[in-house]
Length: 406
Image 1: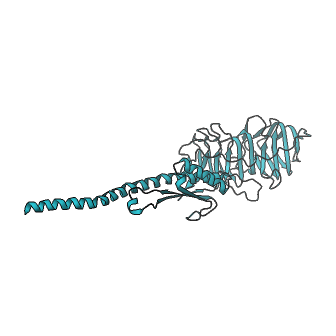
Image 2: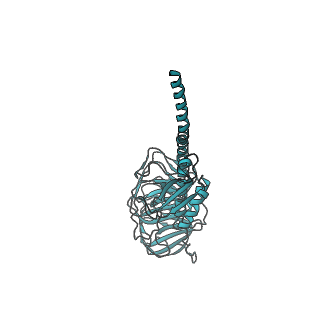
C-alpha cells in the first residue's frame, strides 16, 4: 500500500509540475521582459532629456518650433530612440506641466516594444514605454559690465583694493580663457551673478547675491554687443580746440582736447576727438546733457583724479545711450578713467577694440552706467544700478541658461 501511494504521489508531482511549467516560464519571462521595459524607458528618458535641452537651445537662438522639432528628433535618434517603432511629439510651448510658456520646450518619446514570452498571455499587443522631458530658458540677466574680447585672459578683471556693488545687473566676459573673469588682489565685488564664456578665477572677495547663481557661470554663450551696429560719426572739418573754453559746441577737434580746472559746459551733440588725448584734469568740472564723445585717429582718454563730470548721453537718436565711443577700427590701447565719487555719468562707455581701466572712486553711485570694452580692468569702488528706462541706453542682456525642469 505504502509503495503504491509513493508511486502515485510521484506521478502526481510530475503531472502538477508539467501543468505548472508554462506558468513558471511565463512568470520568469514576465520578470525578464519587465526589466527590459524599464531599461528601455530609462534609455529613452535620457534621449528625451537631451532632445528637450537642445531643442530649447535652438529656440533660444531664434529657431522656430519646427526647427526645435527637427533638432529634437535628430538628437533622440542619435541617443538611442528607435524611431521605426516609436513616436515623438515636440511642444513649444508645452501643453502640460508647470512650464506652459514660450521659454520652454517639451519632448515626449514612445516606443512600442514587441512581447516575447509574455505574448503567451498578452498576444501580439505591444508594450508602450514612454518618456517625457521639459527644458526651459531662464531669462537673461541685464548686465552693467561686458568684456568683448573672445580669448584674452582677464577680459573682465576686478583687482587691487576695489570695492564695488552691482544691485540689479551682472558682469559678463565673452572670453574663452580660463580666467575670462578674474577677481583677486583684495578686491571685493557684490553682484547678482558673473558670466564667462570660458573660466572664472576668484576668491572670497566675490559675493553672488542671486540665489540661482551659487557660483560664476562658466562656458556660457557670449553676450551680444548691443552697439555693434552703431555707425561711426563723420570725421571732417577738424580744428584745434579753443584755449580755456567755458562752453564748447559740438564738432571735430584735432590733436586732442584738454580741459583744465574750472567749469566747462558741453552743448548737446557729438564731439569728435581726432588724435591726441582727451585729457580732463584735476579741478575740471565738465557738464553736459545729450552729449556723445567719439575718439578716433588713435585718440587717448585720460580722466584724472579730482576731475568731476556731470554728463549724460542723448536719450534717443543714432547715438542714444552712448556717452563715450571709441573707434572700433583704432589700434588696441589702454584708456584710463579716474575722477571723483561725486561725478555723474549716465550712459555707456563703449570701447569695443580697447582696454578700459577704471581707477579710484569715479562715479561712485551710478544710476545708469554701462561699461563695454574689449577688456575691462576695474580697480576702483562704485555702486552700479540698472535704472536705465527712458535714458537711451540699449539693452545689454546675457544669454539665458537652459535647464531641465520636468
